[in-house]
Length: 271
Image 1: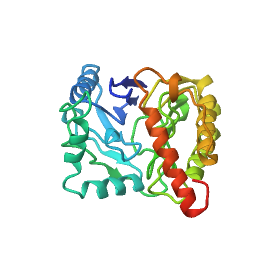
Image 2: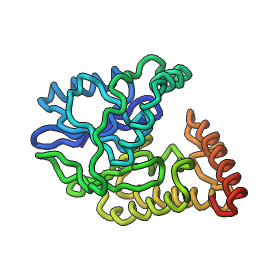
Image 3: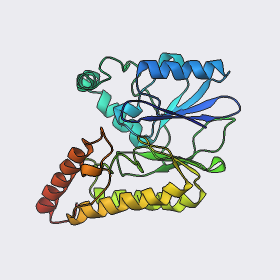
Image 4: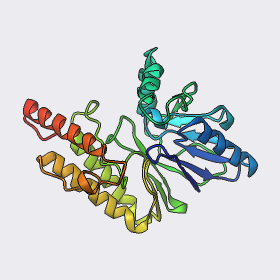
């Protein structure tokens, strides 16, 4: 298994090697990075036989023509969300406009964005031949149809946009009735497999070893419980202790806290 970390918000693309080709998870971010990845695979005699998007955020829905025309999968809820997003004719233009405010303006190809195939509901394994079994752990924490992938025989957990050492938990505050409990439930699913994980790959941030898995679960749980209770999370990913260049995560936290407080006042329930 290989991991490529983009310079853009430490985004991780994951290559799982099989006998007949590779499974490519969340490729990105810039066109040059994806083309370089495609060339590296070609030079080593490997082809992409399947792709997977862990969730329907634009930076996890990218693709490059040089990666080929392999089927690209997502959970049923993820794919339905993507279809709904792309039904807006201005969706790609909105993403491009957002990227104009970043250091990768004009460098992200959007022509193949979101062309994913929905796996049947309740699917628990990636359908690819010649590779290790890749278990799908679907939950409703960060985004609709969000899924982590557990490659048990290799001890690898690909966590999507969760269990990061640089990003705080970002809850789905629009698509769920109880975002706090949904996130806590997802963390419990991670706990069930934690004992078999030797390598943890978050969607953004540093790859962690076996000693990091439970620590990151506990850190994310502490953050979410603090949000629920309206307390200061005292989290090293926000505030003065945040990693240089990641100070904006504090704005993300403040926005979530404010929205949850308003939601609680309106509904009379936590979160």
